[in-house]
Image 1 (cartoon, rainbow, N blue to C red):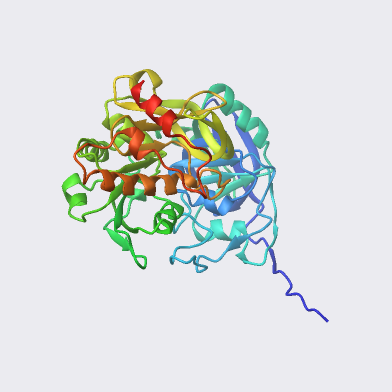
Image 2: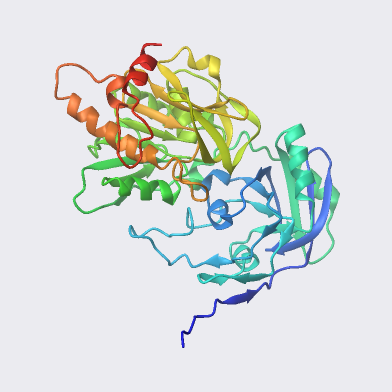
Length: 425
């Protein structure tokens, strides 16, 4: 007789508090609280993903924000152990070592969690990390308000006793998301190295809020990784003798990262192979002389369609950002548009005309989300190899050279001619 191990079934413990959410426009939502009883203020944003709440809540790009999940039921598969590691010694089901959001909003909380790997419920996890949350509210109405009026500040109170709405509204008015520099909160304090066997060299990752999955995918391509603080200078980076540099995702206005922008400008000047991801995409654009702006309500979810402008192919991407690159300002740089958003035509990726430097606004590492764009890391690895192969010759690499890659596993088509045509525009 075949015996099947029974999945653990856990019951919630930190629920049914009093809870109120106030938005900047005066909207009041009364629901039930769970997690940790507390008052917090943050920018209210929404995510359209159906799954992956452990990855989303630990994504450093959400620092300073109150996250509203539009999928109606959250928490049913619980929370896995942080001790479950991947092949590289990184937590398998989380994107950082702590919850990054300031608060959480869901329509229906599942107080029963069942999954082979779960060791605690969502409310228990939030309680342990002092994060307040609210449920039994109309998340669809919240998302509609944000879509019409744009992202706005909000204040959330979870309490065992009464809630003072006037005081909560006053607290919200005293804080602004846009002027905060979150880098000291999300960046690594000192450099850390991750080695792989038979390494092809090292890639420096500038940590402006790096997800574990970015490190994981750099290691997957055969390179060791050196993660350095957000304010590391170009000279300090070169001391590691890296083959390339990755500028990671992260929270807040990219213009708050002036030190990183200066480093990115030096990387461009030195023709260092560089990949920008999300915030890194914006930083590279600013370093080249372009401008960025705040989107009305951002792109946050796992179903965002993007178009590769070189071959007109569509991809479904995972995204989490509130800022973008101004298209007109890009004309004054040597960067061209690589990807665009199929919904609103915002810039989703850029590529340098003559140097081995590329960037994407979406998250090619996914986690959570579809893995359609995982090939970006493999493409970047090929860009690195081609760059150093060509650097031994007399002529300098052009975009048609560094991007002419055709990995049998990840490339979708032969794009040599299109890259050459694109570089001449």
